[in-house]
Figure 1: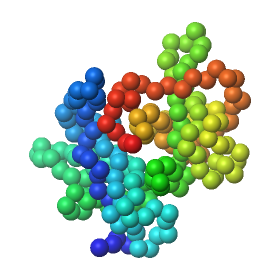
Figure 2: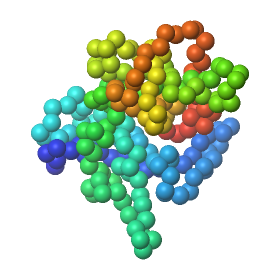
Figure 3: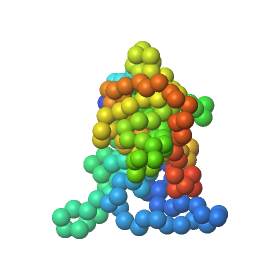
Figure 4: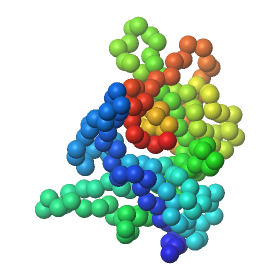
Length: 205
């Protein structure tokens, strides 16, 4: 059972991560299916594509696009699976819908994806909690390394490229290499931001 051009994956756990832990108690924070923020993005690879060479192997953990496991309502109000649904809780995923994969408990980015850590705004003149369009690169890739941009660098990125992911109970922005537009010199006062809801989430580990 192999697809020619697509991975076959299944969610690890439920399709939605609707709970956070508060004082060792589970709190349900969302009961609907519409909000993509609560869709599970952690999956296990059941099969790899037959026609694509990839470092991702059968049994690996992967982080996938939020629409893969997302359910929706048709015009009659009937709840439906995504068009990626295969059978028996398994789904097809294109290579571009896989952002990271795990090897020996270490995460690696797929293709030209990268993950940036948001940082706190230090200026008292601004009302924003987070510094706009800037962060610390945490998970890079070979194309960024070729340009001298490495994990730990202070970078600037394009507007609208901040897609939120929680990995190892930490909030990151997922984007592509060409969304990184500048490498700033670090001043030493950059403080990484991680919200309490990410630390208490039952999300990706």
